[in-house]
Image (cartoon, rainbow, N blue to C red; front, side, top):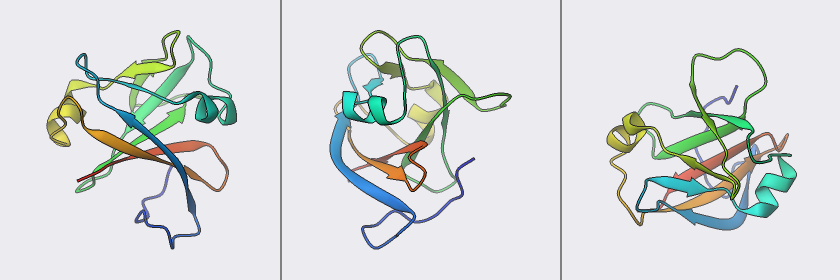
Length: 115
């Protein structure tokens, strides 16, 4: 699982992708196709959604076994619905924009809410 580390351009453990996504009116987020390709994500795949305490990040990882985290299923557009507890916990609103990051192993998408 993802170990907490501050996101910034000087952190060698994560890489900015230059890609962004937005919270839709149905509180869904679409993972851009280039990221889905890197992570080998397809419609119907399960992803784990998590966050860290006092963070503005959603952490999205392809499900690969047992987990007690929130598991969501990607739809045909590569979107997943953000669980209600994260909407409340991160104070998310429709139209919020996220910057996307990948870790070194290219296994985790870090969605960082832009302020």
